[in-house]
Image (cartoon, rainbow, N blue to C red; front, top):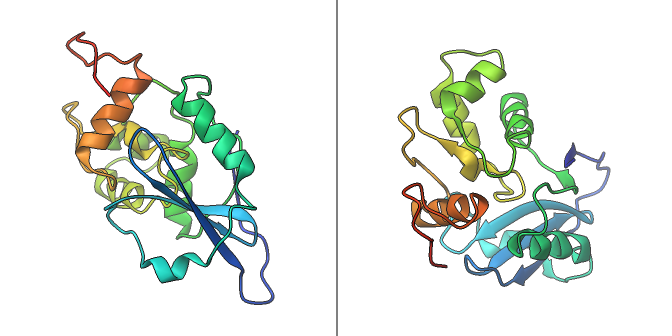
Length: 180
C-alpha cells in the first residue's frame, strides 16, 4: 500500500528529478530528500516550473521506475511506495482516499465526498483531486463525474480516457479494443 509520509525537515529539502518514458508521454519524477514527491506529465495542469524540480539525478527513483514499468506492462495494480506529499489536511485525506480506489474501478466525486464523511463536498473533492502531485500512483484518473462522464484531469482528458481503458483490460466502455 502506498504510504503518505512527510519526513521532518530541519534544513532546506534536497530535490532531485529524472524523466522517464511511458505510453502516455514523458513523466517527470521529482524526489524531495530521496522520497517521491511529484510525478508530472507533459503539459500537465498545475505543473510547476522545471527549475523547482531540483538537480537531474536518477538515484532516488529505481523502485518508482520499476513499479511504473510493471504497471504499464499490466503486471502491477497497486503501487507500494513512500510518498512525500504536501497539501492541506483535506487534500491529503482526499489523496489517501484516492489510493483506495481499486485498479479498474472508478468513483464519482460525490462518492469520494461521502466516503470522507463530507457529503455535498464533491466540488472540494474535485479541487483536491486536481492538486494531486503524483497522478497515476495516487490514481486521480479513476474519479469521474456523477453522470459517469470523464471530467477534469490534470494530464488531459485523452490521457484519462486511455488510462481508464488500459485498466479495464484495454477495452472502451462500448467493448471495442482501445488503441494505444
